[in-house]
Every structure is written in structure tokens, then in C-alpha cells.
Length: 303
Ligand code: NAD
Image (cartoon, rainbow, N blue to C red):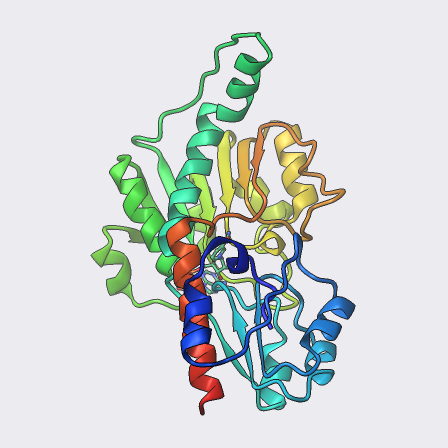
């Protein structure tokens, strides 16, 4: 059973299932499913391919035939991995398949934020022809928090824009930073040094926001924040307040604590550019994520 959008945008994963003679049911939904809907969808399935749908212990308990849960993407924070493991169910994902897409989107959002592309567009369409100013990226410092695949790809792009890059990732050896021409630093040092902070770490289940009120206050006045990682990494109310009181110059956000973000304080905060969790949605990444997880699903089902 798949709940994923690759049903709509690419044929390649379906070919993988067809060639392996694995019958696949395509379910198409505009939004992630609610837990009860997923319980109904998953019943009787041997494999489940999900996007951001909540694969909770209840869903897992209600699907006794389930052998593999596949995340059409990287972050498995919507899957109760411990419950899956306890039930002998494999969890697979598609690391690397969307690195380029998310890194490109991060730069697109950053440039949109600093050069105010969205209000500029609106101004032209509405016949006002105002002029907008913003800082250049060259010579500014970018702090990359989480220096894995996407973080490193963003750092390479930022260096192409002549930015200085510092990065925080407590799980990596020093060589990784050196190879990328990036200075490794602690979280506090990164926040204090940054003109722009960009997040590229996973959301640990149940963890408090990495950037709460105190951490946001540590940023330089006039700094920007880009979040294409996970909404739960940032305290949205504190971020909205920092934008409203002018401490931060802008924020670009692809991911929200709850999605869609009905009622989020970011929706009416000033100087934001907001996108609907579509950082991974390049044609190439969508096809690569789909074929990677379809291939893994077939491999697990064949034992
Ligand atoms: P990755 O596993 O290659 O890199 C994640 C890095 O974060 C690792 O190097 C890890 O050591 C580091 N890390 C873990 N905990 C940390 C902490 N507390 N502080 C600092 N660093 C920490 O993953 P990736 O492919 O680079 O993806 C990064 C994240 O981006 C994913 O976990 C996912 O949540 C998010 N993502 C979002 C989209 C989107 O559509 N917007 C798409 C793909 C991934």
C-alpha cells in the first residue's frame, strides 16, 4: 500500500513493483493521513510506503501482515521505529535521493528571503511597482546545523555564493568539515557567528525544539533563519515573536510543527517566506525516492 505522491508524478516505482510481480495499491491523498485512516489503509498490507503519515504503534498493531515500512524520503520521525522493530518489521528510507532537491530549495528560500522575492512579486502583480532592498550573501556567515548530506550540499552552494560557512554536527569527525572547507564549531558559537542559520538535522522523537526563545535570542540582530529540516526543531511562537519585534530580519520555512500549519503563528508573521514541505519535490528526487524505496520493499518481501 502506498500513500505517497509518487503515485501521481512518476511511473518508475510502479515498474519496480510490476517487474517483481508485487501487487501495489496506489492511494492518493492531498495531505498526510490521520492515524485512523492509516489504520484502515494498512490493514492486510505486507508493505506500507508513506510520506509524512503517522505510522504509530496503533497502526503497526492493526497491521499483522506488515513486514516493511518504507519512508518515501529521509526523515523517519513520523514512524514509531521502536514499535516496528519490536514487531519484527523493517523500516527503510531513501537517504541521499533528495539531497540535491532540498539543498537547491534551501538556497531558493534563502535568496527569496533576503531579496524579498515574494513581496516584490506581489507588488508587481498588484500594480504598485515598489522597490525592495536586501543584503548580499557574499562575505556573510552561514551556520549549517546538522552537517550530513543536505547540510554539506548547502555548504557547497553557499561557498559558491562566496559565503563563509561554519557548521555544527556533534556526530562527525573533524575531517568531514575540513574536506568541505568549513569550520566546525559548537552550537552556541554557530548561532552567535551567523548572518544566516540553516537547519539540516533530524527531529528526534519527543525532543524539545533545538531553537527555542533563548537560542533565537542568541542570534545576531538582523539574522535570517532557514528551516527545510523539520518544524519541531524550532519554537514557532518564539520565531514569530523574533520576527515581529525585528530581532530577526526574515525566515524561510518549508516545514512546520503541524502540517498543514493551520493556526501557526508563522502564517501572519512579517518577513517570512513559507512553502508546503516541498523541499524534496524535484522531478529527479521524486523518481529516485520512489525507485529506491520500491526496490527495498521488493528486497524485504523476497527475504
Ligand atoms: P543525514 O542523515 O545525511 O544528515 C543529518 C545530520 O544531522 C547527520 O550528520 C547527523 O550527525 C546530524 N545530527 C543529528 N543530530 C544532530 C544534532 N542534535 N545537532 C546537530 N547535528 C545533528 O540527513 P539529510 O539527508 O542531510 O537530511 C537532513 C534532514 O532534512 C532529515 O532528517 C529530514 O528531517 C530533513 N529533510 C527535509 C526534507 C524536506 O522536504 N524539506 C527532505 C529531506 C530531508
